[in-house]
Length: 339
Image (cartoon, rainbow, N blue to C red; front, side, top):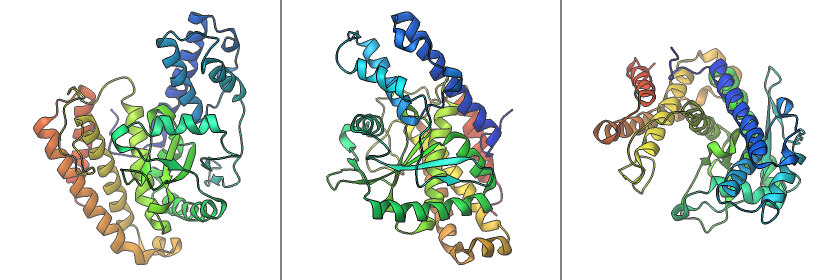
């Protein structure tokens, strides 16, 4: 049995492979069913789909389900992009871990994305009309500074939280830096979407210091991990129209969102516990033994968010078999001795 509270690079890799295999299988099936000849003979086995390719796929599904003619609208462009994107691309801000796994670091402009790709990414990240984030790109100076801070945070995670690092890099292929335009209703630190599998969007303005990225990365990739775990089975059985108090949002949220809040808050707290309990020698090597107070405060905040979310779930949630199993594991882990 998988313990969902324990970081596992092996489990995350299996999830990543299954998600990517499902994408290729579904595209192949769509091509055959709809006689889309341009998609019939693509080398799916060697395709390392980008997050934006997943977005194009969901655009393609919407076109099929709405019976949009194959030769009009966005359909030809979607097909063209899927054909064009069967090749890797580089980023000058790439991060490599000690095992030579890589994370691409990008922002919402050329040379990383064209205008149609940017629209696709924003469309699938900014899915709450009442709380639009209005994401825009960083300029060269902002991106260089954000990348430098991110590299430092990732190096610390790799040193002090190697199991979390293995899990994160197994399912994360790209960090997309952005910032709000100034017209947003929602203040965000980061964002993720199963429909852009492999991507994490980070708000550079919300992280002026490098160490702020450490809990944020754990928080955001844990959302994607939970999306992957629950890809074939719901976590909760509540109607999505039901709304309840959420500790991480001002507005009322569906139980599924509150469940996500509980999971990512627990994962964040467990990571902070591990950092705090690490040897002083290891912390000095990483250059931040003086930051224990920050991580203790983050642990307290994350634990409070978890407990508040758990209270709402226990009172109003109707959990699936999978949802019950995950909640049991993280609740046991959170109830253990804190350090």
